[in-house]
Length: 173
Image (cartoon, rainbow, N blue to C red; front, side, top):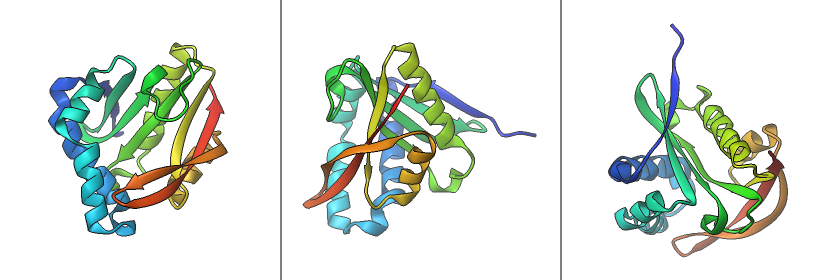
């Protein structure tokens, strides 16, 4: 029997599930590369309940949960207009986050979330999609390059007191 990937838009009622999943997936991805005190600062600031609730209620942002055989395994966050973190362009959409639990990576869940993001961008008549990826996250860089993204710049991403470089990448819709 083939495993089913399901993607559903979420709302403010899902904030605690999002908070738990966000903290877990970010930790799984970056804990080995960051001191615990920096990671703790980032997790408490970025996944604060009030902050996430504001983001979930922002009409220019949208979150989607990914389920694999009915188990919550990942999520997607996209931004339009002024909700975008860097480029504020009405012709673009930002993919701010695509995260999948480590134990479910390699099961095409990240690809399904990306395809869903591309559909959202096309439905919104965006000309391009952009995102930021940590320069040392080679797995993610390869994923986005494979999906047609190219680097066009960089910016600083702070985790605690550490300033890290993200590559900015974009592709046409």
